[in-house]
Image (cartoon, rainbow, N blue to C red):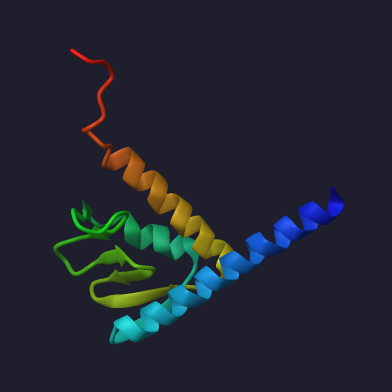
Length: 114
């Protein structure tokens, strides 16, 4: 049982590090200007924006002022934001998923047949 828990923890840590590494690379390669920020700064900038859920890309958010949360790229006013560490990046992902669920509920679901 202990070996299973250790292996599970190792896999989860490895996946988080891989996702964070991809995020850093995507932001650097997809934006002309970028900087590093923590979770608190992300929340500050994210909550200033009037987001629109993409019709074509599942889980992607865009705005009229050139802000985006798409394909592991975070950008505000066209400037990329690299999240400073893997734990903060994981918190960002969770926050955005909850935000999308709260603000863009799927209205196609029905409660009962009539």
